[in-house]
Image 1 (cartoon, rainbow, N blue to C red):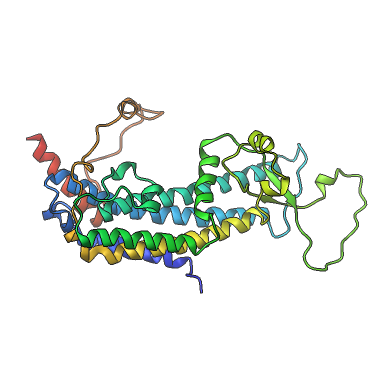
Image 2 (cartoon, rainbow, N blue to C red; image 1 turned 180 degrees about the vertical axis):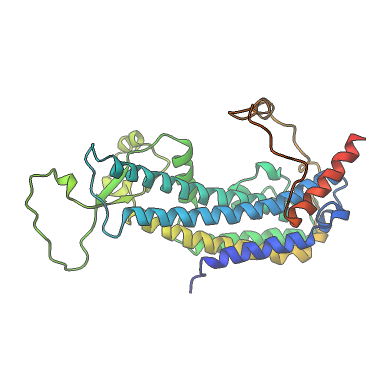
Length: 341
């Protein structure tokens, strides 16, 4: 029996509550990071772990919402190709593309933030800020000078991740990441819309019309089977048309992606939650986790004051915050004042 998708949100929320409860202002973060002598690093990485869980929940919700929008916009019977003057229908086709892109972006981002959490839970010697799905899927680089307990935890996490990935169709995780990269970072491919298949032995209806056939034939969108290849590269490869796209329509692919990535996320979040009682025995890569210098682009971005910089500022005499966030950021304010003196 598959895990209900809602279990993923429950598992992430459970992990989030455990991290918030473990955060100790007097310790400048999580008690298991006590061996990190730099209190700033300890506080920043503790805050980051909580923020990454929050981000995972948001990406999971975004994937569910986008997948639902695609199914609603496509409709149960597909769509016909609109005439050039039908601007409303053409706008809806464009929105389908946008929602598909957002669904794949959310799925890829979810895997990336889980990679950051893998670094922070396993003590991988890699900057958590720059972690992505590779650190989750490979659990590398391995911790140096790790205890037997920590090495065993890395092995268990690899098994959890591997089993969760293997629970779905072969290659689904790699396809998700390649599709996200193609949709977000590369040139836009030609949209693939194919006729809605006839269900069972239903009799076909003969339509006599003077309209262009594309205005009558109802179609479903389909996603690419080899998303790393551009349109030109697909032609150059000599691939037959049936190998260029997935047979199932896009709305079914995205529903399946939400179901499987939810099961995957639930398994990973539960494994991380189970590690909490062991973390005090781990060694942490203090130097590799040190805060990096801001990039030149980030410094240039400081010049941006908004597109309407002369707008009156908000009243900042009081700032209302969730107690959870106030507790965490209060630690950072204390450290800031220490550094300023």
